[in-house]
Length: 181
Image 1 (cartoon, rainbow, N blue to C red):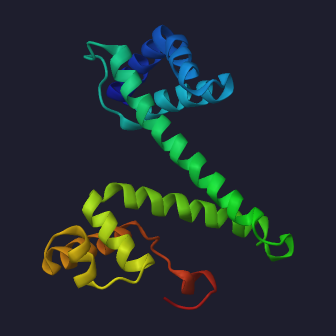
Image 2: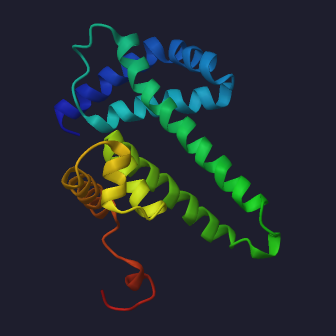
């Protein structure tokens, strides 16, 4: 392990030793679940290790750690909401129409990825994209609804589509069934 990576790991280790208990308590107050608080606390430190950026010069370690943990909390709550909506959708259908557990997991993972991509879009671009794709609204109708020009809406939708294309796996559905892509 190069010296810089070893030093970064040692610094994260020192932060962990000094602040892990505090961070778990901070997370527990928000989650009311010791196990989930411990998981997110560890995820916070794993995030630091994955960044490989020096943390030695952090002046306010608790503020630094809570900022990272807050982002992980938002992701956790968003994923929980998606999982709950998926479970409600399945519960509303007859059990014999449910997809296999593997397909259910793939669908849930796809929904989480779609949500992540949507969250990276600006509010107007997200709204325009959803109006266009889910409600089949024309650019003119979306522009009127949002109070902007059609050209702006075309640009917003194009940027949203590019964002989804960048996030799409390299191999499409054709590659999954063995067909050349």
